Picture 1 (cartoon, rainbow, N blue to C red):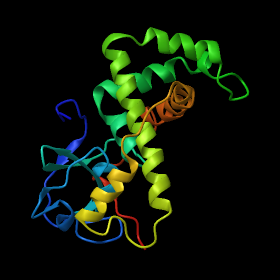
Picture 2 (picture 1 turned 180 degrees about the vertical axis):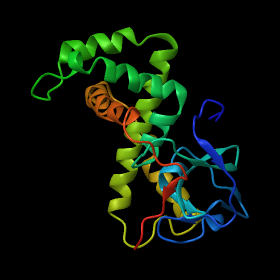
Picture 3 (picture 1 turned 120 degrees about the vertical axis):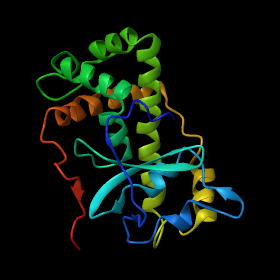
Amino acid sequence: MNDDDLRAEPVQAHDVRLADGRPMAPLLGDESGPLEGPGVPFLLNPVHALDMRLWATWQVGSCALWRPRLPCEDFFEFEALHRVRYAAMVEKAGAQQDEIIDEHGQPRTQALSRFLMAAGGSAGAALQDLGALWARRARYAQVLAKRDGPAPRDVADAVAIMREVEPVPLGPEQLVPLLVDLVALSRKQHGPAAGGVGSPVPEG
């Protein structure tokens, strides 16, 4: 995926580590080639460097590091809040939240259907791509939660996990909970920023 529409601050760093403290470099590839696949960002993010919590993206085997403008809990949230075409969908869902969600916090099915039908063309494609990230987040979290010890252990382990998980389908029944999550996520767009010097690495 092209990072030209990613509205986050690029960061240059050499000593990049995974959340568990291991260096990231050995997991970027081996003698068989670079580690590639749609699950890589979900397996390796977030990363730590320069005393900051950062997010990594991959293009054709190359890795880029980003400091978020807004706080995000996982790679799906990072993409949804910082990639222009995804952030537009989050903004739109937030603007229509009173129509989408009732006073009891429950989705209004008809309003959700109208929102989905109105998201045609490039907006519809963005919603589908965002939905794929949303579904992938849940699936990788489910698989990794069952594993003992650091995961992935190495490149071969990362490839094995992706073979187990992929492909990740997005069914029509998932679009309603997706939009409900986008409404909740829209509140972060206008909340406190991630900080002037990046997201600090948590202690401990």
